[in-house]
Amino acid sequence: MSLLVKKIIKQQSKFLLFLVIPMLLIGCGSQSKKETEDETAGDGEEIVLDEEITTMDVAMEDFERMLDELPSPTKVPVILEEVGAQFDQGILVPAAKAQDFMTTNGKAAMNLGVLSSDLGYLCAYSKTQDAINYLTATQKLSEYLGVNNAVQTSMTKRFEANLSDKDSLISIVNQSISLAKDYLYEGERFGTSALVAAGGFVEGLYISTTLIENYPADAPEAKKKEDLNGLLKTVLEQKDPLGKLVNVLKELGDDDAEVVAIRTEVSNLFDMYDLIGIEELIEAGKEDEVLENDTFKNIAAQVKKTRGIIVE
Image 1: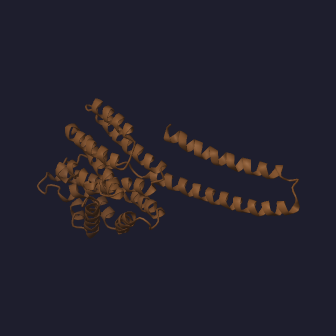
Image 2: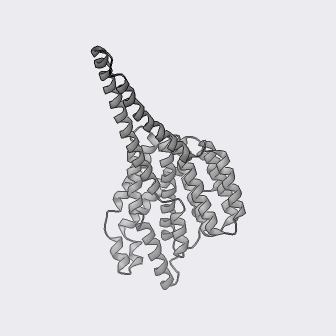
Image 3: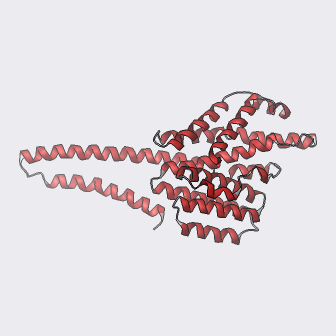
């Protein structure tokens, strides 16, 4: 049975419950005054419970909507390829490290996001043979998290059948991570699902900021200006989704130490985006100065710190 069908059945069951309770109350109208008073008190308790359930349902729908609005782990890697950024496999987490992340659900979830972003990066640059290793790594983490193995097997077959089609590979990666998050969400593992999204987002920013920092100083001036402009805009455009990620993590409360730790780091990063300076330099065509700008340096350092916490 699909996740969507399960959700519909769950919602319909609640709706039917709300219909049946009032009908039962109407049918008991001929009972004694005392019985009626007793049942009125009981009815009041039922109504309060129903209101609590309704409030919770609304809150979870809001949370699910916010989670869905977060960018896919391949979004930034695809943009990097489109703006002409040079490929650098050395900045990725080795696929073999997947085994090291199978210590807690939170660690595995965040690094499922990280390795999915790395997988998207490889697919965007048509590095298909290496991509297969990263696909295997993400499947190991998914299996550790208890995600439906049949879904992952199906995705593997589709991936291997489309190795020559970059766009199809990227689409398959996005579908795979989306199904994993949905599976976790439907199992009410909300924190785990959000941490998958957090890991993928942070890794995309890490790849972007590292490419900027490592950009060859001796590159032709015209190409350097064009590339840096595209890379810097990619980093700046992540402010809005970063804010959404902070909100999602806040909704999870303070019960999970791993959620609290990563929320603190991404909140600090989001605050740095409010510092003005980079946009004006880019608009003035002074991309070189951005690399010396404290705002960008602070953002890059915070991204590196956050990513280090995730992959350590």
